[in-house]
Length: 386
Image 1 (cartoon, rainbow, N blue to C red):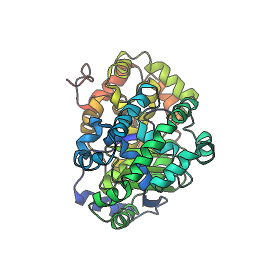
Image 2 (spheres, rainbow, N blue to C red):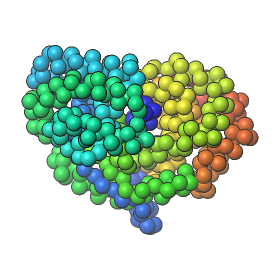
Image 3 (cartoon, rainbow, N blue to C red):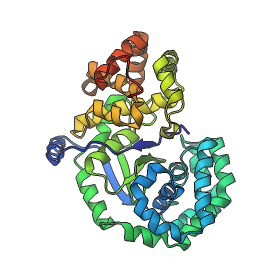
Image 4 (cartoon, rainbow, N blue to C red):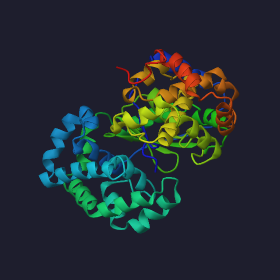
């Protein structure tokens, strides 16, 4: 699985309520093909809480109070093993432990409760492997890491169950989960993400999008199997729409197809982009050029869609402030889309990439200038930001 295909940082600049209202009113004027389903999940929340319990700064900044309240319920050895397993997952190529476990356990009702997670872990060949192996996320090396870690995972989730994680989660939820689900469901009906995704990619999408509201998943939106993604229950509607606009796009094109390979060949000769891949902080992921292209194509497309729906962020601010400014590729692709009025015209993304590459749009001299205009930075100081 491409490490960050399924993870999207959802924290960003929010728009004023009036902007959202105007967008919703505009969306009501046309038929909405997107079928939204909103729910919660105790099991996914337990998996997500491994991030805060691991002690990683990416999570402790959001959940310091919750960690202080719950960690004493677990044996020191269990807390230590969560931290060590999290580190081993990244070191051995599995990636971020929590989000990737969510992918493996995202079918057959495995995520319903901590108990159902444990049931799946007790019989993974029957309850997890068939759908996972048939999915686009399948990775033999990831499965090998997971099966090696199974005894430790069973101990960890048994400990969470014994410590009454279920009760702690409900006590920690400031608003009624049922009310929050109803509010989000009601707000989303005005936003037709699917129609725009089909327009800008030239391919068909299932009209159903499932949004799973979690207590402990900041700062991530996490794409799992199917057209399902996980997000924090307190994200506002704009953020939810932006995550959906992004997550359903992965992969934007076949990354082993002719168009993507040709673009990657061109980008591999771009000193700036290769330096970004090799030198940036690895906690952000995107440690291969293919992974960065996959992600940044989606970011450029979701920016177009979000703007069309009235929930877009300022692109210069977005990409300068996200992940230490590494998404120069996204900014440049977005600039090319804007030049071509792609949100209005649309068509085959595969063909668009091939043609842009053929005419030299991805050559450093041309591409960096486009990215610089979007990022509002000097062309010779696109990255690092300092």
